[in-house]
Every structure is written in structure tokens, then in C-alpha cells.
Image 1 (cartoon, rainbow, N blue to C red):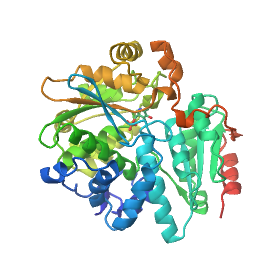
Image 2: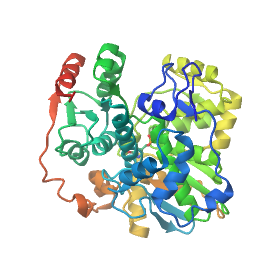
Image 3: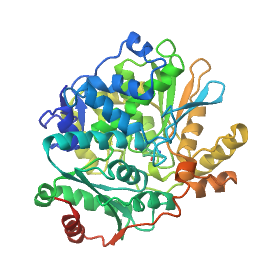
Image 4: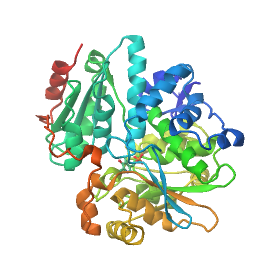
Length: 462
Ligand SMILES: *Cc1c(COP(=O)(O)O)cnc(C)c1O
């Protein structure tokens, strides 16, 4: 299995190379050259198997010879052993024909654990084999950084450095980053905004001497291995509602387009998905683009669903690649236009996008109302991101196809917003109830590239 760039001008790579590289050299994102198919028979055979076994069968055709079957079984087993629910991604009924896919039972209470835990184990196996070490560096507005630290803590071949904006993440998010005691974990609180943290990480990747010296690696949401891990729960949830003999629809709270793009891949593999609905908060560039064909970022307006406060949705490039008939030149051109302010999707590509996705937006008041009403009607407390999904899903349901809304975080990860909307304080799950008592360890650092690079060089274990 070879991986090619969405912009068509980078060398094709193996799964392992694409995973360790992240971004392609031509600025594009990696995708499999062709998409493996699951027959109706293969899908039917997923009935009654464990999440781990389903994960093995869905992902195996994509990884080529990166791992033996035994290794890959072990990687998957380790990745999901720390989840707080035996089903890993349980499906809960909310109403007639409407289901919630709970993706928040991982160690940091957000769906990002599904991909990050897996990628942590894959890095460890791959690096041990080659004898190499890497330094993972990432910027976070909260969820990605905590998931990365949790996935890489204590692994031998990796140091993990996470930059987060000082004073601008929730207390739960901060504590999840600052309380792991392992010496390979480095939480860095930068004086600045998320955009500053993100910009310094980009600077580090562009400083080739530094990048090669510390063997920098990235695990942000454009990494193909992360998308692949998320394809699995589309299969497991659809199968539990009768796939492949019955169609299902999905609504996905979306920011960087990674999670919903995984659903698109599941469909292209053969899973009978009726509708894939993109749900945005008030930062609605994706909904606007699917409605008008115009993709033009303006400023981010902070919301109570902060993990979706995004204007440049990086994985959308992958959807554009297919919408433009796998023409890397056309994708490269619209991405050039984006750098100059924005672009208009061609008529043909817009039609293809609309055949693949529906969309909707949910403003702040509607988000709070969805949390409150769902609590009143079902006794389920939703996090604000999941509430955005639920609100949009209601407009896209049909009588004969079940709707599955993805619940992307646990309500206790965003307690202030949830309490304001519902009057209920969401408690942390038992297994992490002592989070507020654990010791914190963090380095405050200036928004200064030289200072950050010096610190990383001093800290890495050679
Ligand atoms: C990251 C995140 C999202 C958005 O997911 P994308 O893959 O970026 O679209 C939604 N909800 C929560 C809680 C998240 O952490």
C-alpha cells in the first residue's frame, strides 16, 4: 500500500513513512493510492466481534507490511486497554431513530484518544525496531495536547513537548497535561494565544537544522494514521444498527474535518452510509463553503465548543482532493489561492462535495438549549461539541434511516459551559476523580523560538 500527496508533487511513501512524516514535502496531505474495500460479507462478519478485532480487520489492509499481524494485534490491544468502557465506543439510544456514539471513554475523555493511543503504540514499535528516537512537538488548544501526552507518557523512544497557551485552557485540560510524572513528558505554557503556540511549532519544523538535530516528529490531525484509527468506529456503530443490511447516517461535530473525513473513508470502503452531516459551531466556514462554494476564512470567534473554533480546516484538503477527481494540481492551486485569502470551489467539485456531505451550524444559544433539552428529555449530559452535533442532526433526520451523532468529549471536560446550560455539575469519572489533587509540573516559557528550541535541546534524552 502506497501513500500519495493531495498536491501530487511529493514522493509516495509507505504507511510507516507517512505516519512518521505527517505532512508531505509539497505541503500536501497523504492519502492511500487506492482505498481497500470491505465486502458486505466482510462487514457482516463484524457482528459480535470485539472493538479491537474490528479495528484489526478494518485497518489491516491500510498498513501494508509496517507491522506483522501479531504486532498489530498487540498494538491495538495496548492502545485501547486504558479505556474506561468495555465496548470502547458504546452506542446509546436518545430517541426513536437517534443514537449517540460515545467516543469519550478514553484516558483524556475526548475522541482524540482513539487515534492518539494507537499512534503512540505504533510509534513505539516502529522506533524500537529502527533504534531511533524522536521528539514529538505539538501545539494545542486543549484536547490534542492532553491526548498526546497521555499516549506518549513513559514510552522509551519518544520525548513529548506540548505547547499550550498559558491561562487559556480549561482546568481539566491543563491538569491532564501537567500531572503526568514521567520524565519524557514536557508541558510548556507559552505566554500567548493558541495561534502563537501553533506558529512556534511551524517555525521549529521550518528550522531544518533544529528539526534534524532533535528528530522532530508531528502528530497533529493531518497525520493519516490518526484519520485511519477513526474509521473503525463508523463500522462498529453502523454494524450494531444492522449494517450492511441497513443504511445509517452520521452527524459529526467538526473543526479540522478529521473525524468526518474518516466517515467518508468508511463509506468509500463499502460501508452503506446514507448521509454524512458536517456540524459546525458559530465558526461555520465549512457550512458556508458547502452552502455557497466559497471558502474564505475570517477571524475565529471564541465559543463554548472551543475544539471546533477553527477557520482553516486542514483535513478539508483531503475531501477537496476527491471532489476534484484526484487532481493534485487543482488542489495545489486552490491551496495557493487560500494563502492569498480564499478560494471558490469549481462547480463540478462543489457538486461532488454536496453529494458526499450535508451541513449545518449551531450558534451559542442553540448549543446551550441542546444541552438543557437533552438533559430534560433523556437524562444525558452532553458536552458542548456533542450538543452542536445533536442540534444539527435534528434537521437532517429521516424516518427510515437511523441517525448516529458522534459525542466527541465527556461533559466533565467542559464543566463550566455544561453547568451554565443545564444547572448540573458534571462529575469526573471515578477513575480520574483525584485529578484535582495531583501535583502539577509545567514550564512557563516566553513566546520566543530561540528560548523554546534551547529548552527542547536541553531536555531531550539522547
Ligand atoms: C478535536 C475535536 C473536535 C473536532 O474534530 P475534528 O476532527 O477536528 O473535526 C470536536 N469535538 C471535540 C471535543 C474535539 O476535541
